[in-house]
Structure formats: C-alpha cells, structure tokens
Image (cartoon, rainbow, N blue to C red; front, side, top):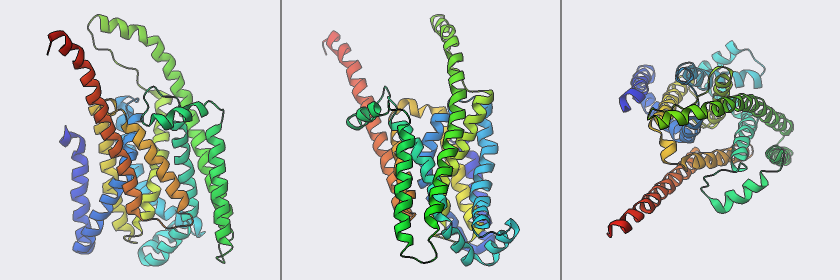
Length: 375
C-alpha cells in the first residue's frame, strides 16, 4: 500500500536529488533536500483538507488530481508562478523574467520580495474564508466544543464570514498604509494589498460557490440513492456512497487547485530564504508537492479522516493560523520554521485528541459487555 501510494514520490525524489547533484554538486543536493522538507512540513495541513474533498470525488477525478493536478502544482506553482509574479510586478515579459531568474538571481529575489504583499493578501484572504466557513458551520462532531458551539450559533448570521474577512482585510491594508508612510516608495502598497485581498475573496466566492452549487445537486442524487443503499445493506450487499462526477467534480477539482495554490504561497516565498536559484527551488518544492499529493491519496484510501475525526478540525485551524501569518507578513517577517511548526502542532494535537476519543468510545462499548459477563 505504501509503495503503491508513494512510489511516484520516491521516484521523483531520487530523480530530483540526482539532478541537483548534477546541476550544482552536493551543496545543491543539501538545498533541494531542505526545500523538500520545508514544503512537506508547511503543506501537511493541505493534504488533510485535500483528502476531505477528494474522498467525495470519483476514481476518475482522483486520477486527474494526481496527474494533471500534479503538473499544475509542480510546474505551475513551483516553477511558473515565481516567474509570473516577477513579470507582473516588474512589468516585464515572461522571457525577460526567466532570463532574470537565471542570470540575475539577486534582483529576481528582490522583485519577488516586493510582490509579497499582494501574494500574501490574496492567499491570506482565500485561506481565511476557508477557515471562517468551517468554524461557523454547525457540525455534529466538535473538537474544541467550548469554542465551536458559540461560533456555530454566530454562523447562523448571513454573510458573517465575508463581513469578518473584509474587516480583517481593511485592518491589514490600513496597518500597512501606516507603515508605508514611514518607508518612501511604498505608498501604493496599501492599495495593492486591498485590491489583492478582494481578488482572493472573489476567487473563493466564485470557485467555492460553483463547487457548492454542484455539490448540492449531488446531495439530491444521494438522497434518491439512500433507499437503494439501505436495501443493499439489508440484503448483505456492499453499499457504495455517491461520489462527485461531471460538473460537480470539475469545479471541486478547480477548488482543490486554487486551494493548493494558496497553500503554496508561503512555501514559494519561504524558499527564497534558503536559495534564489529557480532550478533548485523548483526541484525542492516539486519533490515536496509530490509527497503532499501522495499523502492526500493515502489519507483517502486508508479512511484516516473517518477514523481520526478531529484531523480535519486541526487542519482547518492550521489554515486559519496560516492565513493570519500570511497577512502579518505583509509588514513583519516571520520565520518559516514557526509557520511550519504551528501547522504541525495543531494537526498533532487533533490526532492525539482523536486517539483519546477512539479509546473512550471503545471503553464505553466494552463496559456493557463486561457488566453482562460479570468481569
């Protein structure tokens, strides 16, 4: 199971590390290895959230996510995206941006750094909306009940997530504007943050809205199949749950790709703290992205989210933390180590809570049996 799921990741790792040695020797090998670990640690919460969505999709669309989706993630976000943001921010052509990346890496890195406020605002708002929509929904299973119960009640207010997100964006842009007056040449960054943040919010509403629309249509078909499933169970036959196909799966696929892109922002920006060589960056982050994909599939096939019910909660809290960190980095620098540790700690905590819950449920089930047998 492990080899089947992670086989491609192992192969890409071997090829990537060999390519790094051939490109820049053992120093490049070390850089690519560090970047791979950085990407995996920063994106583990991404895998958990992806698994929650991917398990609803058909086998065909799962394969699409693992093939075309990987190409988009590895080559699009880890190689093309840094070039695009430099080309747009510096008003130059893509060919010129590529030439700059290979021949003037220091200037290239500076241009990416200058574009960070708009990237952070876009990604931060997209991820913040995911977090808000999760915590304001009334769920049967609650992890931090003392917090999630009152938030679920507040979630009954229409458009609360959007309103709070806009307030956060406004405060972020105003905070940056105050800082901009103290640094000449950056007076237009506050407007850039505001526009980019609104673009991130609109992207979430459009893609998420379309996904939700087709998901609702899927739920209608699930209701029609419910009776057939019950009859199958009574007859001792396996009952298969409805999975997303057609337009529903397509828009969920788009949603997954935008989500993955938002998660990639911190990894791409953080990579410049280690190297400004675009080749090594693409190799390291690409290897990490492959493991995130494989981990997503592993969680789906093993049913891990069903067995450890608080993992999804922990991942969404990690998303909220990452969104805040991205917005804070508009003005202040935060170490990638802190960013990665926050997500790892939250998910580890939710996993431990799931284990405790499972043990408690098992003890409750065994208690009546022990009482009957007199043990």
